[in-house]
Length: 224
Image (cartoon, rainbow, N blue to C red; front, side, top):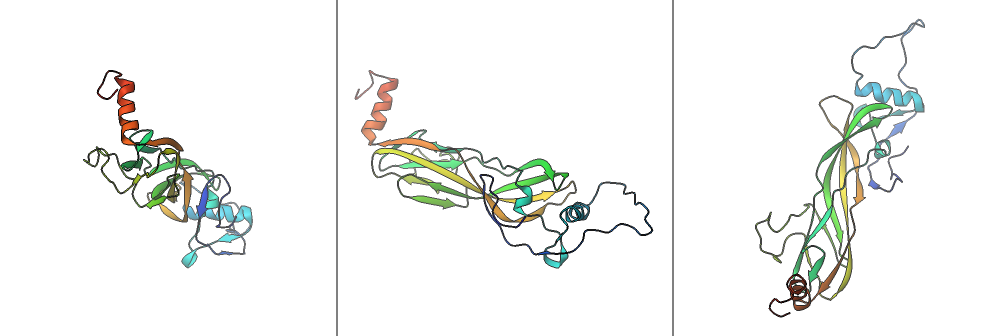
C-alpha cells in the first residue's frame, strides 16, 4: 500500500513514506520459542505487518510509518454544515454558515490489532452554489455564540446577490494520529477530506423572504 489517496469515498492527501525491502523481525536462535508477556509495543505491531507483507516500512531515522491507506477503515465523523437563517437567505445580506465538526477518536483494528485513530479538523471548504467558495481554518459559529446580531458579517458568512435556489456544500479536512494503547499519539502524514451534508436553500429579496415568512406564521400581521 502506498502513501497516496484512499479510494473509499474519502479524499486523502499524504506525504511520501520510504519503503525499503527486507525481512520482518526475526525470532530467537536454536529453533526455540519466545514468549512475549505484557502489551505489545508499536514496534511489535509494525514488525508483524512487515512479516505479513514481506517488506519493511520505515520513516525518518528508521521510525515505523503508518499511512493513510492503513487507516482507511477508520471513518471520521464530519458533523453538520449549518446555516442561519435556517434554509433561506436574503439577497444582499449576510448568511452565516458554520460547522460542528470537532476532534474525536475512532476505535478499530489497525494492522490486525486494537487501536485508536484521532481525527482533528484542520480546514473547512465551502462552495456556495453561486460560483463563490471559501476555505477557512475555523469552523465558524452561530451569531448568538459570537454575540452578533442577525445578518452581521462573520468570517464564514456569504452574501448572495441574486434571487434563486442554491446548493451549498461543505467538506472538512482532517489530520490523523494513531496509537495502539500507549499514552502517546503518533501523527500520520497527510490529510483526509470528508464531505458534510448538502444544503439546498432559497434566496429572495427582504420583502419576499421576511414578510412572506412572517405572514405564513401570522397571516393578519403587518404587510400581509
